[in-house]
Structure formats: C-alpha cells, structure tokens
Image (cartoon, rainbow, N blue to C red; front, side, top):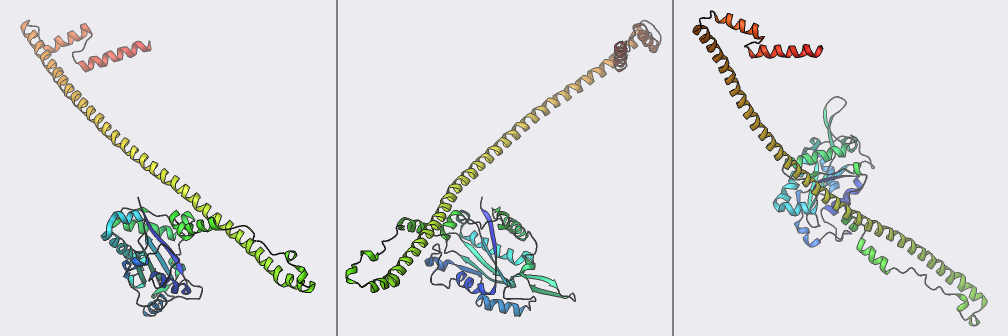
Length: 395
C-alpha cells in the first residue's frame, strides 16, 4: 500500500526568491534532470501567488497586521511537499489526483486553524515522474497579547513548538486523507527515521548516478609525463637561463600537475564512494521489497487460516447446538415419562386399595416404604442411597 507523504521545510527570507523561481518554473535551466519542461504546461496552481514570495509575504503581513519579531535569521515561511508514490497516482486516475491535492490543500488550511489566508502558494507539479504539490505558507499562531487581546502572530518556533510536531502532522494528514476516501498508509516523519526519506531512484537523481558512473569509467588516474630539464638540450641554453626556466616554468607546472592529480584522486575516491552507496542501496531495496512481498503473502495466509478457522468454529458450534437441542428434547421426553410414571403409580395404589379393601392409601405407602426401606419418591430415594454410600465410605 502507498504512503500519505507530507514533508515540511522552513525558510528564511533569503531563500524565498530561489524557491519561487523553482516552484513557479521561472528558471530556464534546472539541475534536476527529472523535470520535463515540455510537460510544464500540465502544472497548475490551487492557489496562485499574486506576486513573488517575498512581496506576497510583505502584503499578507501588512494586510493581517501580523505580530512577532522578525530578524534576518528568522524562519518566516514553511513549505509542505505533499505526494505519494508513482503507482498510487497511476492507480487512482486523473480526477482523483486532482481531488487528492485539493483535499490536501484543505487539510493545510484547517490544520492548527491556520486559515487559507496564510497560504501564499500551492503549486502542483506534473512535469516530473511523480505528481506532487509545493505549498508555501506562513507559520501563524492565533494567540493573545499581554492585555489578553486576540492577535495573529508570525512565529515558526511556536507553530512547531511540540517535540513531536512532525509526528502530529503525519498522524493528522494520514487520518484526514483516509477519512476523505484515499487508501493510504501513514508516512513516517523524518524525526522518527533520522533520514531524508529519499528512495534509491531519488538518490540516483540527486547524485547524478549515471553521469558519475560514466565519469568514473573514463577518468584517467595516471600521472601525466612531466618535462625534465635534463631531457632538454642544455648545450643550447646557458646555465642561468636553464635555472630560470626550471624555477619559473617547469617547477610551477610540475606542482600544478601534482595538485591536480591529487584532486583527481580525491574526486575519484568520493565518486566511487557515492556509487558504492547507491549500489548497496539498490541491493537492500530489492531485499526490502522481497521481505515486504513475503510479508504480504504471509498476511494473506494468516487471513485465510483465520477464515477457515471461523468456518470450522461455526460448523462445530452449529453441530453442538443441534446436539444440545436434541438432548433438551430427549430430556423433556424423559421428564414426561417420569411424571406419567408417578401418575400411574398413584392410580395403581388407589386401585389396589379399593380392590382389596386395604384401607387408606397413605397407610399402604407408609407400610411399603417401612418394610422395603424404599421411597416411592425417586428424589428422596436417590438422596437416601447417596447418604448410605457416603456412610459406608466413612466406615
């Protein structure tokens, strides 16, 4: 399953110009080869800035009378990069992609009661491999002044005051997007993983992996031949001139070549380190994907076992219910038989008494019980026998 991804970056005023030119595609050239300028017409704004980010910031600050001390080193704006993975966007289609970013925009406006008025720009980029949105906003907190009057205050440190601010952001964003119908998992904040969350492919782009491999392949590490004064025809040169050439031309060139050679060696070492890291990352990425796939298969097997167990449990429960119902029916019949037996015994005793003119029924029953040591009442007889057994055991 794909992740709900939201990342935050804080900016000082000096950063806004470059961010504006990148987000609004005002540059002629980009270091990121992933940008296809022929597709930049597909980019669109959910909120279009009226001016540059710097001027937009000044206008909002003045219009809403924002409080707070702003210094040169102060972070005055934040940028959310909101996205998921390429497969997620391929799966949901164009209409849902649009709804995804519009929903994310509403989340930002509502989160911490920010308010849409403090969003400077929300630009969706479709000219790169994975759709994503750059959303620039002012970190404004709604508070009170010393007199208790409500104010809006520009305070980045207060906006992100809690130690788990980014965890709260991830939780809230994930829940909001799922609530609005997007099938996503919760993304992990940078503070939890202590890394930049670059995928292998992203890291390849950042480090120009292909170009680096090509450079390493063609890089020559041999030290070029250095002219030696002894190889020159000194017969044609005076000793003084010879020394001058050696000190002023050959030695400086020799030192320069040696320095360039060392720089080349250092560069080769660094580039080799980068490519090795990426190759190792690719290896672990494949292993990770296999583990995730195996885990998914195991999860499916567990779910199937649970399903089969529930079916068997239901089958066993159903069989026991039938058995219990049968026993209850049999018990009911036995009760009827016993009751009918008592009724028949009473009738039989009454008939005997009348037939043989034996007097009252009670006397006959009493004499029977006394002479045979047996009760006609089955419960009393069982109770008597149990007591007799207990007595015998105690002896």
